[in-house]
Image 1 (cartoon, rainbow, N blue to C red):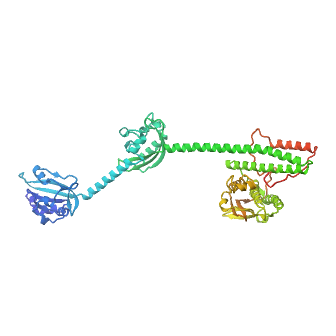
Image 2 (image 1 turned 30 degrees about the horizontal axis):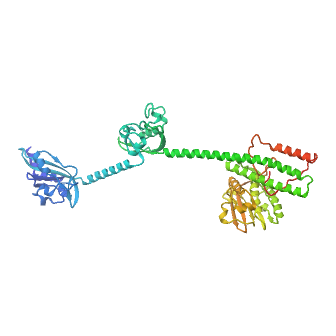
Image 3 (image 1 turned 180 degrees about the vertical axis):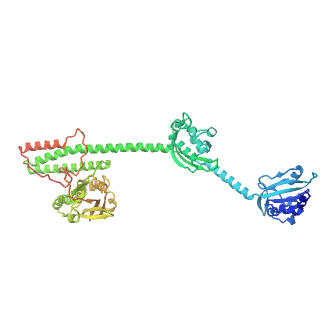
Length: 573
């Protein structure tokens, strides 16, 4: 025992205290420094030998760093009270003008006889820790202010999916007081219709509830996140509320949280529903308009066909020159009216999406020859030169819709003939390539009045002419080119126009095609106009044909002559 006491000599004790990482200061009863280890010297930025014998508070003046006021003497308090005294969190010193936070404990040094003859001060520099704590606190305060001020509803759930916190926006959406909502399941706080009877998570329909499914998936997987939309009911309100919910999580050991960001999209859903209702009404109105145009066009065409037939029969009888001229003019007006009605019918079919295109093998050479032959005669009578296409440049048999190809050519050639008073009209056919797709390219060129550049974009819009004078001078509904563009688009192709006022125009269209081995047989003589499904009350074409045959038989005394009907350059049926 005596040997052990000899080991604790002042030198050994100072060496032991010098190796400690914390600062150690020893003072006498008058608080004068008797020992200062290197760690304390570093903290106080002084030398041990220089400060020995100085008053401790002169070397280490404790102040409240928040206010800069001196802290009352903790050494005296420890020695008088014979117990250890610690410093509060905001106590420290200023070193070179910068605050240094200290964690310090002052303890009395008691002699074996019970007298107090000094004090020990254990110091630790906790400035970095305090700064980190203050930063964490600032971040917490900042996030809390963002959480509170956010216009998006934020609801924090604990590890059992119960509500732990909410911001003001969430309270407003939920319409339930904060104190009442805390601790409740999300579905219970919102009165989810699936949990009315047994509570959120215990109802018969809860397994299919998007809220419950996502919450349970989050409880099983800490990295789970999702977005979903759900309808909920609020306390005291009958109308449901649509919520778009974004689920995320904060990982942690036993204290992880589920964060639900809620956006009330009820107003947007109402607008979407209103737009959907408006769209349905518009579609119904468009459908009704299309049906009306189709039915009316058909009902008008039927008596026009009958008039044309009766005029043809009357023209076969003995007539004066004046009578024949009047009847031919009437036939021309009737044919023009039939063409306008047919254009309206086709446009209604295209607009409603009821027009179907055929895909059959047909003779392209025969189609081009028959159409161009008709317009070549009319151009010659008008004093115009007509150049037909060079047929060897294109294959003879292709797969497509010959009826609609005729309609496109008829519209373009009819316009070229209508707007050209001198010069020529030409048709060019060639084969093009777009990637691996073969294209049939046809160009109709004329030397007519031409089209100003600013008006060219309006050409393919329905019911549009260049101007009112053009409409009055040349007539037409303005549907022909709109129908052409729609037909070409339906065939997978395109159309373009190049024109110079006073020098003419060139309309070029191209459609994809595949070659055919031969032309498929076509039943009967087709028309370029597609007949709609007629009402049951309508007169069948067969009945009209029988009526015309009967009239012809009566006018000719029972004999029937074969006569090819005249063509005025427009589409006919």
